[in-house]
Structures are given as C-alpha cells and as structure tokens.
Length: 263
Image 1 (cartoon, rainbow, N blue to C red):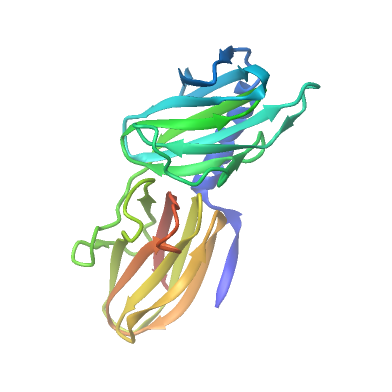
Image 2 (cartoon, helix red, strand yellow; image 1 turned 60 degrees about the vertical axis):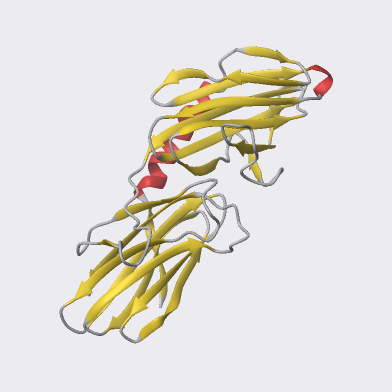
C-alpha cells in the first residue's frame, strides 16, 4: 500500500526557507556586462549563499558562474530572466564541472524566482551556465549533506530502527552507480519503509531480502516533497535497500533519505 504523509519532509522545508531568502537576495543591485563568453565569480552573501545579476550585450552570449563546494552535499540554484518591464520569468541553466564540461543536457534544468534545482555534488569547483539572456539574476546555495550510502552490497550502511539516514547521488558520477543500505529483523514483522528524494531527475528504490531475492521496486521518486511510505510484511532476516538513477542514461543528481520502522 502506498500513502503520502501530510507533513512535508524536514529537509525540503529547510530548502524552501533557504530559497525564500534567495528571492530577497535577488533584489540586490550588482550588474555585470558580459562579453560573448565570460566567467564570473558569484558574490558571497553568507550562509553558503551566492548571487549574481548580469546583462549580456544584445542578449547574446554565455556566462559561466563559478561556485566552489568545500564539502559533499547539495547545490541549490534559483534565478530568473528579467524582461524590459521588470517582469521575471523562467530560464534554462546548466551545471558544468571544473573544466566547464556539461554535467547535464542543455535546457534540461529550468529555474525561476519560485522554482529551483537541487544538484548532488562532491567537493570541487562547478560552473552554472546561463545563455542568451539580456538581463538575469542567479542565486546559488551550498549545503552539506551526509552521505551514508554504501558503494556496494558488502559495504551497505546498516540503518538503525526508526533512524532516518540520508544519501547523495552526485553530478558526474557513473550512471550505473548505486547506494546500498541494510536493516535486520529478528523475527517476522510488518515494516513501514519511508522514502523521500529531491533532485534533477528520478531515483529508484529496490528492496532485497528473504522472499525478494531478485529485488522489488518500492518506488521511483522525483522531487517528492513528502515522505513516500510502503508497508510490507517481511520474514526474519537481513534486508537491503538499493538506490539508483531511474535510468542509466539519466544525468540525475540530488539527495534522498530512508527510514524504516516496525509496525
């Protein structure tokens, strides 16, 4: 059985609060006139937040906005193109690595003053690409997130009963990579598994163990702002949860978390 909890996921609430601050920051007046291709350092405004407001001559060109990530976590991007009358509207952005190589297809990610993109990132330098905008505003925020996922079934992280643990799918990692978790049941029990995810594309969650040795797909989640719940009767034994991109061709990145409890 699948249900949705009424309360929003705690991390998502924090992100919405952070983005509300971004919208206020967008009103600051900092203008850069860009050549056909230019690289700029975004201005730090504290608390891991950065901004840049720019103009491109004749609305043509490309600007790479440099952001440095010190610890593994998430990179949150918001912004908007600005019309001549001051009206904001959505625009495409693209995340690139330290050598300005694209980490996602162009026009895959869109942002506005009410919409934002969440990337999973490793430490390093990243560039946010904006193209062909006469006038625009861009905000970015960096937040550390613990990544408990094991790299293989043998190194699966054991989740304690009722403990919520987080994981990351980072931009640029191998498309077929997976994160692993496990939990143990001393006897047959009915179990509730709670999942949440937010990122650039969908993540899929599989359950392995006695009675499901070939794995069963519990959910495929994309920007699920509320916890997904699955209740299932399980036999005594060790169970594994595998987290992967919904498609091996996907450039999905972001974060998720997992919790289990006996009913």
